[in-house]
Amino acid sequence: MKTSMKIHQLRIRKRSERSKYRMLFKQLGLKVDCPRYGYGNSNDGNTSRRFFANDEAVTRITGIDNEIVKRLGTILNVLNCQESVNSTKFGEYASETASLLAKIYPQKKLTPTVHKILAHGKDIIEYQSLPIGELSEEAQESLNKFYKKYRLQNTFKASRVRQIEDLFNMLAASSDPLISSLRHVKSRKELQWNYTLEMISLLDIPSVTNCDDYFTEN
Image (cartoon, rainbow, N blue to C red):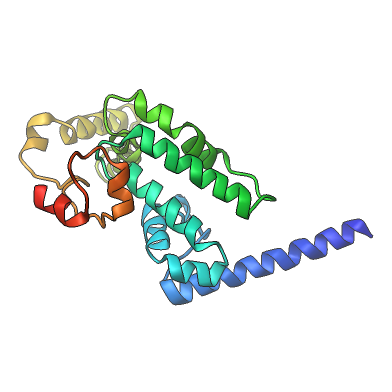
């Protein structure tokens, strides 16, 4: 009897989740947790940015507390903006967010990734010589895409040795400093970020009190 009740509750929960996913796609165009052949699932950086940028709609559709959505979105933007982060302020903000999560959703456990950011993010930021946003896995992910592209389109496949040799030469040419210096690729720092007052308060930027001051100085 207990087993059948658990199965019934699980089916209801999955049905509710699917309904929310459909609403997210219908209203925001977001494909959440959709499998992609060769790429895991649809939960990538673009999906995350659009999800947290539409916090009010996300709260209405999913029922997640709006303050939680805003805070998590702010933390992710701060970690990815490639600016120097004030570790003390970030630690306080992350601690407040963790306390709020425990208060609003006491029955939910934090995932390992969220726990690392909220509990240990301050320590990680303090011991890094570069802004935390510059130490991401994006370079590795991009290289994986190039690796697959070069292997399929730019290698001689009659011999395994020849294929590896062609692949090595293509990767060496694409990463050559002289060739790379001839073209200008905008870094994320040069792209327009939606800096909010909450974000700026966590960054290590002296004498900046609002968004207008920040964009004037930069």
